[in-house]
Image: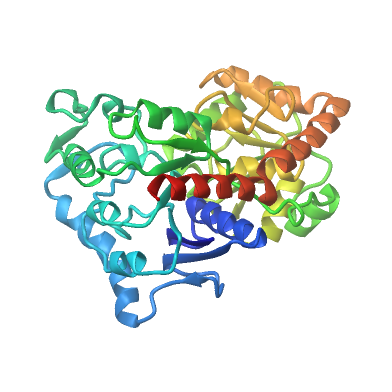
Length: 414
């Protein structure tokens, strides 16, 4: 079976890392898998990026041009990025004329393929969703429900004005996507969104989680890991990570800060580690020491970081199946999170961590205490976290599931 994966990048960003890992899990399962990207950073021969200076320049310019075209006429206070996916790509002819048996789309909406391009693909297609964009308008995530009800003039949110970019983008999808595509979601939550969406409710959807090479991703000795990273020994370390650190409101760093305020009077020895962000000019005073690691890109550094921590906290308001949660479990570090979206697919309550009531920061604080307060319990949580990750997220498990989805997609179009 010959597969071409398409993603904006190979290793830059959460969706890219997830797609790249799926690609290599399939190669390990002897699937002829290749990856086409706009930004190639890995140096991997199985990844094909732009070949000429002109094509490289175009991949950088296209998203900028698309954004500039709508900036003067579309106003929104929603901090989530918007992708109209308007500009046509030259890739469609190459993809349709390739020897691939199936095209596997990932995060392609940042002007890698236009809405019309996706509708012009003629080979069997499987599309793994790493956010909500495919069934929404131009927004990647939203707390509104236009995606479920349809994008009408009467249900536009009050924080938008001017040209209705989201409605226009959704209408283009409905026009161009006449043939249902087999959708894959990493979480049950996102699959349910697909089934409820006005655009894709009749499309086939399968839940397949993101994967990790669990033979390489092994826990490191905690003392050794802390020594490597220059982190203190003998104190509980709480880990939080996101692209941009605490700058994305969807990741809920402000909710974690509220939980830490509660813990100030109850846990004297606790320190926080933040990755994905360097120390700000004026760090907040939380009553606990904070260590900023900046961006860690290689797997060994990430393994050391998760192994050094005692608890990974994911206080997200909205999330699919965050890589940070899967990576933490596989290193034997329990996860504390809110019981929302895709997080219950990672955290088995009081088995691999703790699921707090949604956005209840007192319960989030209690969950952190509950994990750390009993050494025997903690040892069990750590062992169960690793075992659960191996059983559900390992390369062989996920590759087998994808091969079954590929076979079904090819059969449906034959």
